[in-house]
Length: 395
Ligand code: SIN
Ligand code: CO
Image 1 (cartoon, rainbow, N blue to C red):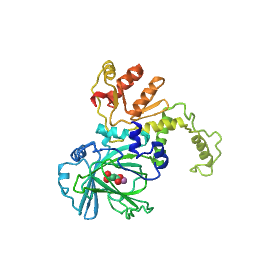
Image 2: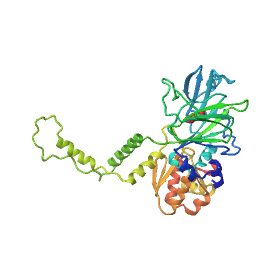
Image 3: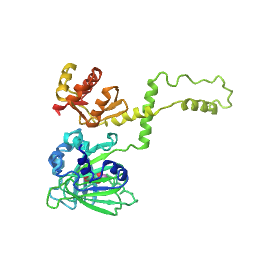
Image 4: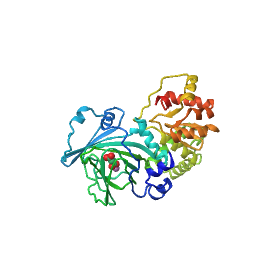
């Protein structure tokens, strides 16, 4: 992305300044972050996505003060029963997750946030709400950029430390909310919020368009989640590696025990010594992160492409170039590349080529023609068959 476009997106500061002063630290309001931003899809198109089986969506309602949340897929009747005109006793909002998996423009929008590592990116959520609608006062555990599409939204933030939630509500709503600051955002304005900052977005129609907000959300795995996933990775690695932890428990020095049922301290310390020999290096950690962070969420399915021969594939990619499928996640660490949980080790010119694919999610025919070798061509062919990559023309 052009340098001045990033400056505009961040309200005149550089990505370095943003990271140093705001990221994970404090909110930043950016007026006119994306000039003339009109949104990427209409309310009807968003509702259409929420009717599809593979799309995660929610309708959140506040009826006479009580919160309700329902999960999609929805149908026409679900929408027909919602009030057509704004009703203060029945407010509602529709929220659709991972819109970037379905709309190329949404994936392109996320690319504008390339100053944050892909390993931290979660998804683009889009919400629609008539006047007064929203998900109520709450806090998130994640960093988020809230980009306003059509209509307006009043954002209130609070510096409160009281994060107690309403009991029995189907979503996390703060019991108390003390507004410290508020801003009215119009199309193209954006608000960055660090994790755990209490906020409350209220749709404002003002007689104009209903409100649509684009949330560029980042993920941060919990330490416990990282640890348990890493231990599962180590378990697999240990079972596959015949040379790891050789030997068998031995007790040629066994003394006569008073209690036959007792696990002796000698046995405990022998096993502790064996377990302390389980070792891992930063290379293992990097390999784990590559697989884990690029692994698709369980609800993501890839549609296999029609089988074509390797030579046909070669011809096609040298004509059109390739793009990552919208649902694909590609990361790398040194010479190791990870696409949707699958690892590939590369060297030489192939490393730079695949770095470009991972960073930009696409590779031109010219870049491929200059650098691709036979082994990588074969791998790309397999990934194409699996639906992980697509021909640029087919997008
Ligand atoms: C929204 O309703 O679009 C905003 C969601 C949020 O506050 O995180
Ligand atoms: Co939020």
